[in-house]
Image 1 (cartoon, one colour):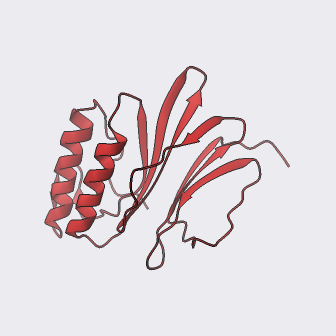
Image 2 (cartoon, one colour; image 1 turned 30 degrees about the horizontal axis):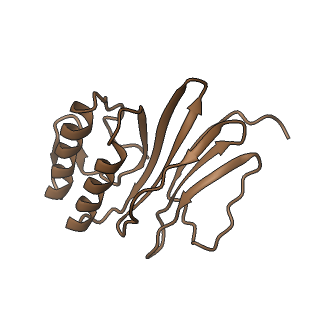
Amino acid sequence: MSKPKFKIICISETWLALDDDFIVPHFICFRNDRKKGRGGGVAILVHETLVVEEIKLSRTFDDICVVAVKIFLQSFPFKLVNVYSRPQCNDNQFSEISIFMQEIFCDDLATLVTGDWNMPDIDWVSNTSHHCIIKLILLVCFQILVLSSWFWSQHMIKVTF
């Protein structure tokens, strides 16, 4: 087998069930499977040559899947978070995302967030939404809390498929 070209892989929509085996040779797999319904789920695969530890969140969530790790690259540790948010928008989902964000962004450690937020109806340039007011509120909170307070920048400004 050739040397892997990737050292870190984030997967959204794993569709794995709790009892499914998911083994990738030479990678440590951290995952969070959707508890109800089908679809969803997230995973972070880290090559066995990297130093990594899982970040345990204080609670589990019903409407989002989150997996988080701390990776130590020489003298630069950082957090990597992978999120899956269901396409259906509800108050509980907004509450869960708010709780998760407060917990994950509680320190000064550099953090990279990836995943599938399932928000195709948000215009990220004009900050408008035509279908779900909660998604717009989430967008505004995300920008205020994360992009401003933690000096983050947003790199995706349009829908990705």
